[in-house]
Length: 223
Image 1 (cartoon, one colour):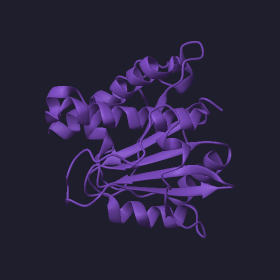
Image 2: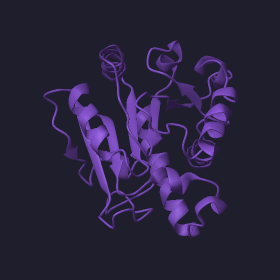
Image 3: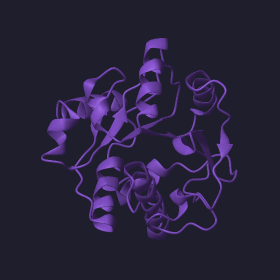
Image 4: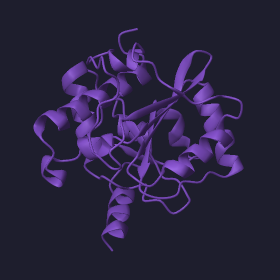
């Protein structure tokens, strides 16, 4: 019941379109409402907190909260950063994959953040999304690890899950990081309100700082 209530809240709260959310040029994040049964609406406080951190750390104008976007919505074309999370299955139709390919090739940035339980379906769908493009571990000298905040050791570890090291997997289009998959870290949990997971302040700050870097890279900040 709690998951259903969270989904209803997210669908009701965001503006009808990214353009309306932008409020005169402010930037926003698209929360991907995907099919397959996974809880796409997980971590409801995460993206408002990340958007606030982006404002504080970069001075970029951002909206107070994210916009819920389905592939095929006109709002997709107004968001530079598309975020997907959850604990279960994610699945795209062929028509959705074609839309997503076009959006990525026009400069969009997709961040898939495993909230524990998405890994198998994410890897399957990425193979369908860009066949022939090999997923690779993003090197530590890539700008996502330094554009605003420095992460010389790469992706920070936020939550333990299976106790494995964090994995930041990328798909590159013409040399540009277009898709970034975060596994065995759960940045979204670290972005939530402090009392949700009781993470130490340093852990939560690291998660938000990494999120700021990802958004900054997506919008070309500092370039």
